[in-house]
Image (tube, rainbow, N blue to C red; front, side, top):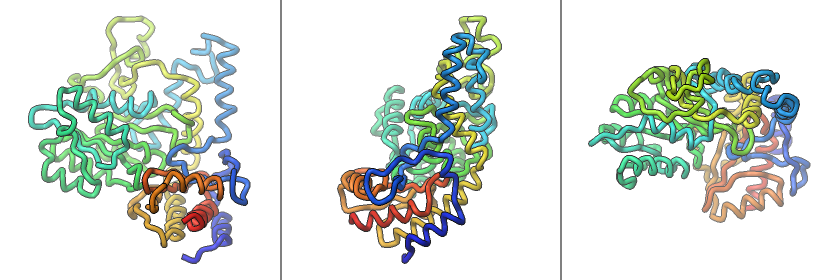
Length: 402
């Protein structure tokens, strides 16, 4: 489509986003001072507020020592509770269903301890055939843990055929575990419909929301999802390796029959320091916690969630659709493999050597994009900080390189 740089500049004036809240890295190539950052689906940019607020938590340690657990400006003992309500709002959950803890795959394992309970004739785990490798490793190891052959216990199905597979073979499926937004193609799965279908076949349905949380509006409680987990270093801009989130639907919170790994932070906080040998968990998602939370890792998550609370997912989703639509128009001469039902990612198939192409984009044109070998280039115009001009630069750089 014939859209030029002036068109992109005009759109940025009319629809500016919130770029001023973030640090944008300097460009190492091209003719612009900042990069066109299109890799927020891999690692989000740093909010400007993060440094000062993290230093406040560090200062509390310096000035208070152990007394910071109770006397810090943000006391450490209940610190994780500061994140609970904003995280619940982000994913459409009740606060009692939501907890920030650990990392994504650790949370998936802890949740599968409770929710993957294979029985003879119903022992399969259904994943998409393009599931993120970590999810594949996790479900295969869960199958082995239960004495099953992962090559037969794990069913890998094309995203477009999942509903068909459930209709045909759902009676053999113990657990459906899918990515809310596919990491490779950017496809947004029909979470409510697939959850309902999985339940109708007697399966537990969980979701990996690594590429969905902070990207698309979610209503986990209303949709009846059994459990979910997500990371916070992509669209949630909480830093590399940042803490993850977990959701457990309220209908499961008080179930005495659920198996669960436990630790000190699983027990009732009111009796935690009585040092009892037997845990007494409350009927909340906090019961899936094991260890006390790392305070300095929680601070950046809290800072980021405050931004999402201020801006709102509805507004972000609307801007995301405008930005991604603009980028799609610019890429109309390329092979875009992302379907219309998508988040804020477009995946372009290239002739091969995606890694080398990403290096050229960065060092020759100042465009940061994410490659998946051998032939997929992922471009993510993140609505919080990406601009229409970033989209234009990315498309022009692809044309120049290809």
